[in-house]
Length: 434
Image (cartoon, rainbow, N blue to C red; front, side, top):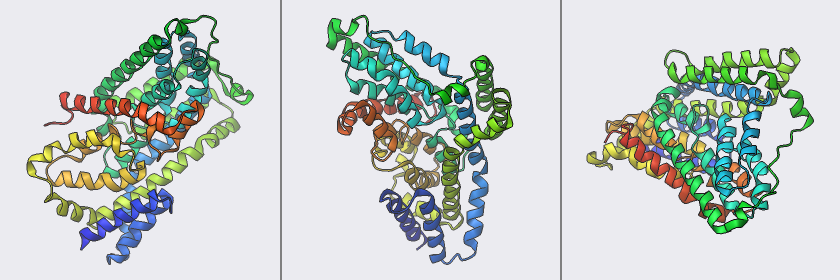
């Protein structure tokens, strides 16, 4: 009975989110509360929800202050010299242009926002692609690969996986660092091959001189916020914050590092109290929207676990998985995670599907950690730039002026290849034991 109630709760959650009848925040709260009340848990429901919220506090804190930190140093122009140098260096050779596009998108996506990455990179590079008659699908593929390979600790999929499985971000991310490096090698190799292909297609037309270099135009408000004199200070501060988080993540909570880093960045770049308030206000909306969803997810996972529905579903599902196949669950999920981005939006997968898979795997002796890491190798990481379920996809096809179907046909195999390469790397490097 409890297993059926849990299954009905998951189905209702997915239906509410995917049909857009409820926002993810509303669905993650209302659906499990109603289910728990129908299951006869009464006032215990509130205890389950509070326990879930308590477990998520460090993750929510890290996400909020990471968004504020990266927003502040970006406002200060920390990435401007690096971006301008890349734009000057690409020249008019297609191979260098495609690789420069990939590097530029990778740097801009450091803040974890696919929308910002696409809205900055594509308009900056598109005039050069058009001047040389390069295939716009290559531009879309290059930015998609760069953004898709990014599952840094403060990105949405990583935060969701950490929240839904109640695992520290550092435990999920640190073992995946060498896997991500392998993915980066693959991405830049593909960018090089795409550029070479364009050179062969265009012949000497791809090497014409006199093509205008891509330009970035800053608004007056953006110029007023720039602090070029603090470039090296901001770079060193960022390296210290991220380095401490990766190396000492078990001893120093990531949330604390971003809190301290934000305070220092604000005091140095914007010493005036009113300017500090405006910088926080400028980025608070993005931070609080995601924080609200994460807290709602805490209610959902807290009720599902506290009521025993999750465990009951897992016990019922265990009988369908041959024991000999249990150890392969992470590898299978790693292979399927990218295509699953076409079926599930990030909230419904990470908060609705992933906990069930992890619980089933746990019943068979496979750590939830490996399940979460497998999902991160494709589910709304490499998968999100081609998924029709994410608005960011339309920020790729819109500015480039290509059809969604054309973009998916051209880019899907490349992104799927990146996911497969990282899955194989995870096996070879021992992240997923066989």
